[in-house]
Image (tube, rainbow, N blue to C red):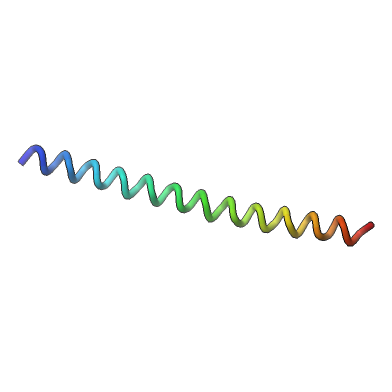
Length: 46
């Protein structure tokens, strides 16, 4: 009984961690896109 509760808690923590990482990844991808657009604008401005 106690073992299965421990496994459930570990699983929940793993899922939350993966979710957090994927959210950070999406945010990073958006920031990279913004930077690329900014660089493109700066190059065109020359």
